[in-house]
Length: 166
Image (cartoon, rainbow, N blue to C red; front, side, top):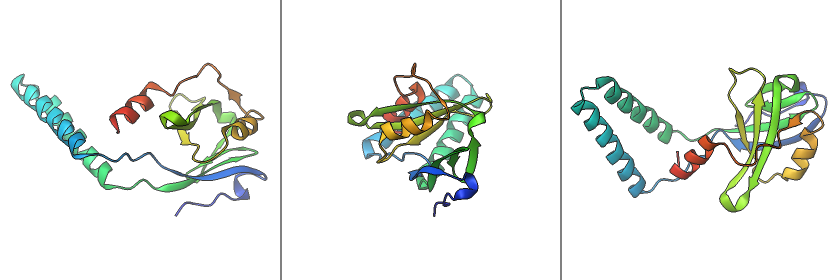
């Protein structure tokens, strides 16, 4: 069960919605066949060229992927409060967030809210908008954060992951 966002994260809670940790794509038998063929080809090439480290890394990636496939994404809450954003029970104060942007292209299946942080060690945060109105979310966040209008497309890594169904 998702941890509930309460006023301990800020005196005013503007928006709260449930999101999955990540998008789990359904895979067909054909998808698994292509992935297995690619894996076998990579391992065969690695063994042929005596690159045992590459073969080991490919097998390790496969093991991690199998465990990832067997696990269902947890449902957690995302919230926007007067002092920061809340995800997975963690408060990220606005002073730690560099910017946000929204990519809303429902015909392509992209409805995401992105955040970058001032510390380079924190990765970009991607939140699915689910059934939220992006205009209202944008209006609320602009009160507290810089909106990066130069970002017009979803990040390349997200596009690749969506197209390849990772």
